[in-house]
Length: 112
Image 1 (tube, rainbow, N blue to C red):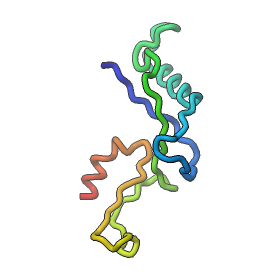
Image 2 (tube, one colour; image 1 turned 90 degrees about the vertical axis):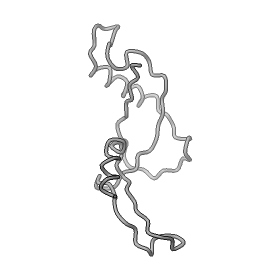
Image 3 (tube, helix red, strand yellow; image 1 turned 30 degrees about the vertical axis):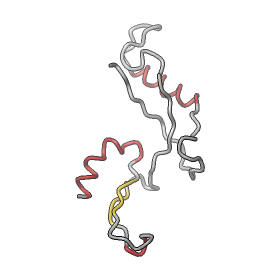
């Protein structure tokens, strides 16, 4: 259906204060993404960008991506002392940033 998914350029790390769904969509950042994708696409003329994003975006969203200080995902078992309520074992696999969708299957296999 010629739909393109484009992800943005990360900002500096910040402490998240907004609630889910309240993250500001910054129009200047959206335009930077659109311009970059259009520039990289097969431009046929000044008025026709062809390829990806030949039309204006139909949906614009913003979100925070979980990352770590060193950029490597956190993967492993939590110690029993860090689990609230003392339940069974708890495993964590997070911090992939914008690569989460791509790395998810391999992370799942590694965790299994």
